[in-house]
Length: 147
Length: 147
DNA sequence: ATAATTAAGGACAAAGTTATCCTTAATTAT
DNA sequence: ATAATTAAGGATAACTTTGTCCTTAATTAT
Image (cartoon, rainbow over all chains, first blue to last red; front, side, top):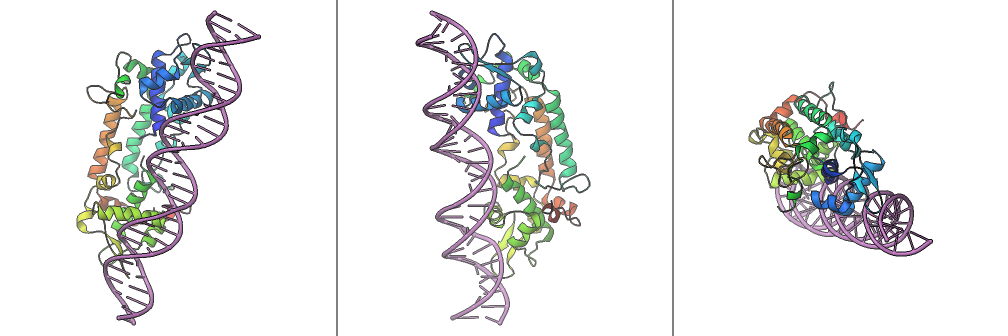
């Protein structure tokens, strides 16, 4: 469904939402180990989430790391997707037709549309906080590595 | 949603289903022009659909080209997706977690599952023939090029 | 048989994505 | 102030996907 970069972005953000606060910042090492992602690549992604879209926060230096505020935890999952440039995927024609539309629908259009609307609804109503809460006591991420 | 290769595969197959019969085969030139895809790349894709999965048929030589039989027109859209290796996408975790499952669900699992099931249902019930019929008198494909 | 036409298939090129490494900047502790 | 720690950012490498080109094989028409 999404690119690897977006998967890492989602996992990292959820993890940071669970554990990262202004006085308990999390380093890229811990994050990438927890969510099973390549550290440097993940760092780039977090930079983007921070710089362009201000979904997460960070500070350099000892005891530095990443964290989130109450405010950004309330953002919908879609905010992460937007930051990762996955917006197109949410309104694109399944057949990749540029001109597919209500008035000139491709043969999948009407049925696919209904499904896509549910996806959008899901990503817009679920917040980062919701996802963090749903896994607070689980080890969904940690267990990813050990097959 | 899908790769470009898969988009071309879907469009090409629908187009062939509409126009290609054993005594009216369609050349790669006409196909790629109609569906707005790179000819050589599309040729490779059609080779695969032919050779590995026998969704379409072809013959070389003058008046050669691609066509479909009644039988393969009745195949579900999913057959094309399988041929294009998009199967993984239909049962993958949104977050890309290897271990996400019913017993150890990621925080998107339960809601995403419902949507994914609809997608699978759609691709399994819609046949290539259905899609061909739905656009028989339209110029959905041809119009794709001219913006 | 020969020439013409069309798909098959191999080699390769271009572009995009994923991933690594190294240097710089920011921050903290001593 | 200095040293240590951590993210920021640039350069580049590895890999995948997308796309092109050329030669070969198959088929048809003459």
